[in-house]
Length: 367
Image: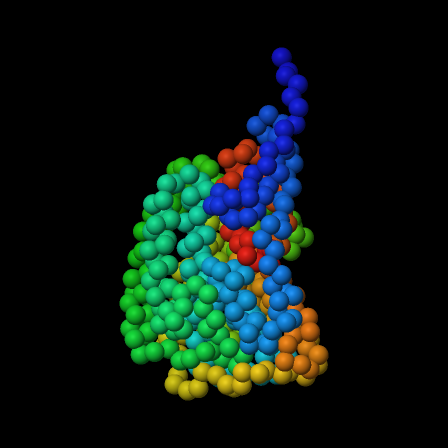
């Protein structure tokens, strides 16, 4: 006997951490099956782009920290590179290497947090997240040595970085690089072949390469579908043209591959930082110390490979000390574009895991 059921609409969110911040999903169910999904954003809107137009170019750096606050270093990097493009300025070599070291350490931090909360969404109670937070704290200690801050760092500056790394930074970094691969092995031992993880993520919410490209996906979620695209290779910036690394790609574009790409990118980031430590030479870390940056009229956009995908600041200068226009290409916002394609046909429990697999941050969604 076939039972006739009425569609039921269920609102999920906004709350934390199940929906990763102030994000709301309207799920329409037919029985237990999801038949429609509507993402609802706008609860956090910060007006970052408008605020940027009321501040000096250097002051805007503090705003970039608060976009994806799990990846402040790469936010800084994307912004200052666009500022430098406006005037044709280039950071000195040591400054470039320090940027890459900071950015790759930040990528490790972001992927650790993404992995930990992904396992929380899957139902693991705290243990994997605590493992991830433990290693994250060691990297935040290094950030504190670099600039005195741990999360909202404001470390990078137009023309280089705020200051050179102190003497105690290098032995602490060396110790981290020696020990981190073993800890990642430990983390993978808990997760990668875990039969519950495999059952809940393998083949769940797959996205095809065509869907990912048409949805403008970038970063690990795009590469999980098998698309070999990484701006550090395709359009190198800072010192990325001087280091060797592999672009990690998946095969199926499912929840499992999205996790696996991130955990393997951590290993590539360690490899990049190792090379930077060997190659960095003494020298200046900043091309200019001018606080009032005043570019000529023009426009610039320099995308970077942030942990969550392509991040870029489109800046328009009118010749004053403040941006005339600032628009942010935020990967978290755009990576939500295929939420409906990912979830229709799956269950409520799958929806929460699929949402977590995107590893987005509402700070840059509602920017």
